[in-house]
Image 1 (cartoon, rainbow, N blue to C red):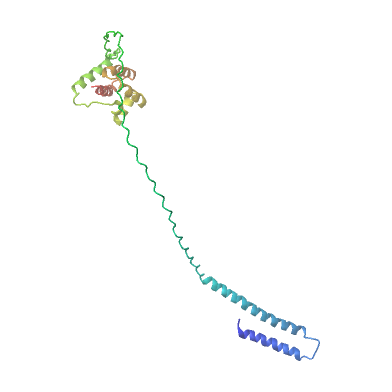
Image 2 (image 1 turned 180 degrees about the vertical axis):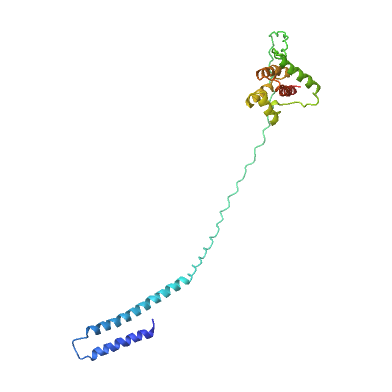
Length: 241
């Protein structure tokens, strides 16, 4: 609050009050004088009121900026004295009894053997199992028979140069698989089924009847299929060389 402003308001109030006392008219102050006096008083009241609010505002700002005092550090309690338990009385161990000698254990009696009275029949000579016979050869047409004869003749002469095939299902390259499937079989499924069956025949003689049936069924004797048919038959032959 500015002191000069408050002094000016107080001087105005004092002057107006003296002027009202000097007035000899006992009818009291006029409305204008009364309103003027009330205005001075209200202005002085507002001045003091604002001064109190500004001081409270400054006090709150100071409280916000001032850090709170740290709480007092608690004093740890004094440790309690350790109470040691009383030692237990030592118990005397009684002396061990003298060892008792072990009595000898007699051996078990020998088991009685029964006399065998059953008659043993002489062994009969069992006949040896018949060796597996190759599958009967079907009646081949001359053209189909020529395919096998040429493969067997060329395969016998080139047997050292051509490696043995251990598994027909894994021996084909991609090109040979496509060639055999398109030329000698209806589709790739028929080729896979034939390879699985021919791979388990045990010998080329047992695989030959199935090859002959495939040759007659799919017309391997046609001129444009004979070379591919010989290559496939030779592949099966190398499986059993």
